[in-house]
Length: 150
Image 1: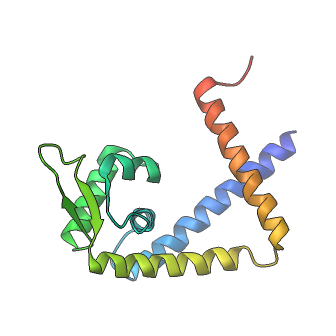
Image 2: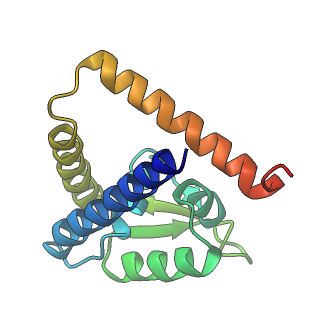
């Protein structure tokens, strides 16, 4: 059992480390940080825009990180806010034409990275892997809220 824990922990940390290095290297090419890739990718799926709160939920980021990132992307001309009213968290964040171009670059590079990382896996192995990974993530989410059983 300990061996499984060690294998799982080390593999997850390696994946996390290398994925962040790859995204940082790729995003540096366009003057952004690696974490911005997630925001751009998510926003590209919402042509009509989404709120900062929804964006944070989908990216797994807190309000402060979302605010900083949206402000930076707005300054760089990648996003605009519409319908803010009195609460900027209710404003819809929408990719500009430049933002769409950058998001397309991010998606293209991410697809290449995922394809290359999965080299040697059959379609059935890939399906089992993602199914297993999603189940593990769901179980860990429950454990993090409920705690380990006594």
